[in-house]
Image: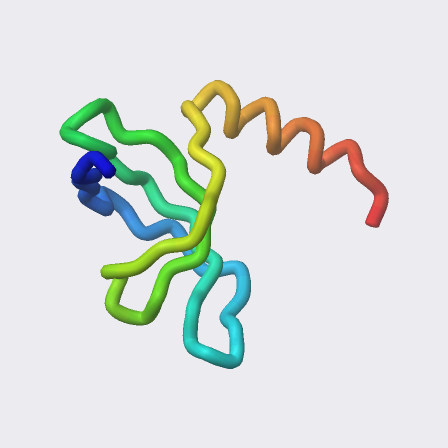
Amino acid sequence: MADIRFEIKQSIGSISESSKGWAKELNLISWNDKEPKYDLRDWDPTHEKMGKGVTLTAEELKKLRELLNKMEL
């Protein structure tokens, strides 16, 4: 498996936390020294381990916000 490098450029916020301390977070992350993207995934408390997630460009995040704003909850 290839070595994946990441750098959290900006921690935007946590959505939830599991009983084991893992937090679902929205962050701005640079993966393998590329342009930072918005990233939503679970992280362990030390940010060394991560779960599967979704990575979005700024334009995709704006579109997602538009869709969420249209929803009735």
